[in-house]
Image 1 (cartoon, rainbow, N blue to C red):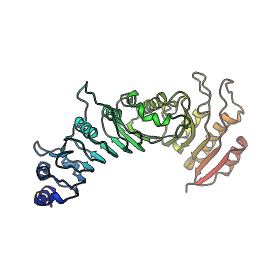
Image 2 (cartoon, rainbow, N blue to C red):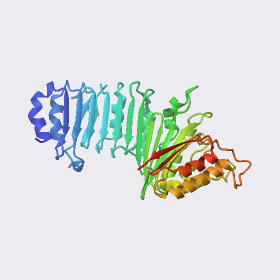
Image 3 (cartoon, helix red, strand yellow):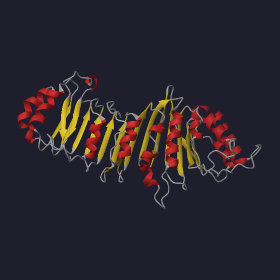
Length: 400
């Protein structure tokens, strides 16, 4: 039965409902479907999950539904999840919401979302993704800061960067355990990552605490690059064209470095999947970041190992990643070529034989461990590595 027909026929019983879940793949007249709930009210309903069909998102005028929370038709609503449903959300007072999730809701303006936030002091989970109707249209719109003591999870994705910044700038959640930001083809990220959201980094600035691990993974594809950044409770996923992707990483790192205090640095783990051609990814890590671990795929060896083999020529800043401790190398299909490059790099950095090192270059910390991934055990390579670094721990991982 179609959702609108079901809700019309079941409307005499809605007062007893405690939850409502609809998942439909058919076109629905949401204005008619939700009208009985708005007219009669659902005083006991606590959970509403409505999942529509994205193919039918764009509906003719007059078919958009309405959901009124607060003192309206849903006075006890605690959890609401809407996906691909053309609805308008109205707030008429304080709500009892614990979780609020919108995904691909085209009709909801930013002012409506802010209204929900301002009237939901007990909110615990917030998700807003793919809502292209969210735009900042009022230049002088001022919204007070909203503090959520119980808010532990926030997911913002597929939104305009300025809108993401706006939401994060007004939401203060001191007990947040998970913040996920997903960005696709964003503008320069200084629009998003700037002083207005520097409060997100406050947990990392507490006296006596070490900075959390900054985990960065880069996957270069034919058209787009994918960057994943995880630092503490903050996760940032970026999909961007290859010509600007590394600049986005630089924007994020600048934000973290600029608003994290002046003393301690972040330990960094770097992973490069598949191809690797843009040195901007490795050159983005300034003094506030200490790269401790690198995991490099077999197709990324050439550029990265060459980069690690020479002191930086600019600004006399010494060796790249001088505190590097752990290295993962995936050898596989070009076992001998990759092994030769690895040995050349280790000799240049740690063996000093036949190399011209700058006396000003900071001596890099000897590697603590090397992990070799290949289909056959590279015994000769292991022996030669030990000749250069006698105390390094070498582990072979069978990738066959």
